Length: 190
Ligand code: AP5
Image 1 (tube, protein in one colour):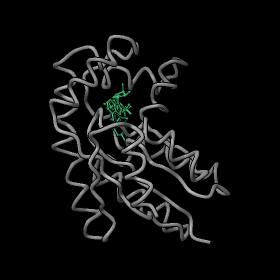
Image 2 (spheres, helix red, strand yellow; image 1 turned 90 degrees about the vertical axis):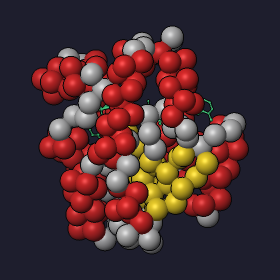
Image 3 (tube, rainbow, N blue to C red; image 1 turned 120 degrees about the vertical axis):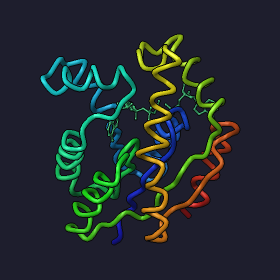
């Protein structure tokens, strides 16, 4: 049986984490968020976490080598899963190519890239609001949020072309109620 492997894509604050929660329940998928995995390393004060912390606090991307290794371990540890939601990964062409290589080797390719589309001012508003309570330092400073969005525009957004070339890119309006957006995603997944 074909596995359902979804790349949930979008800029910082687009709602990837929020929507993943609903989709993993509905489709029984394993949620792989590189942001969550990195924050767990920081919390545990591992060498990797200490290295990543400074980069994340500036709103820059952690090295491809680190995040690809983390994802590879999690895919291998969940061989029997019905599929994955990749949240915040891939973020560069090198990451996308590595992911294709890992999944194709298991004959379980990416099914679709679902891209949540949200205008810049709404992203900033959402992230600053979360920054009031989340404890995430990268949500509290408008300059860091701007850096995260700039990193997305420069390094991550081009992946839309990468997945379009494979016929897998699907843009979804990410503005509205959380439930309405979930419905839009579920409709596209089919
Ligand atoms: P990561 O943790 O992936 O953060 P992000 O991409 O900046 O995304 P967010 O988690 O902030 O946003 P989201 O799209 O998940 O939205 P959410 O649902 O949370 O990455 C953090 C850092 O780690 C990066 O900057 C980088 O340094 C590093 N990193 C991670 N992955 C990496 C990789 N692959 N390569 C290199 N470096 C990597 O929602 C945001 C807020 O909006 C919430 O408060 C939510 O309640 C609210 N919200 C959600 N939906 C709606 C809605 N419909 N209406 C109103 N508010 C909403």
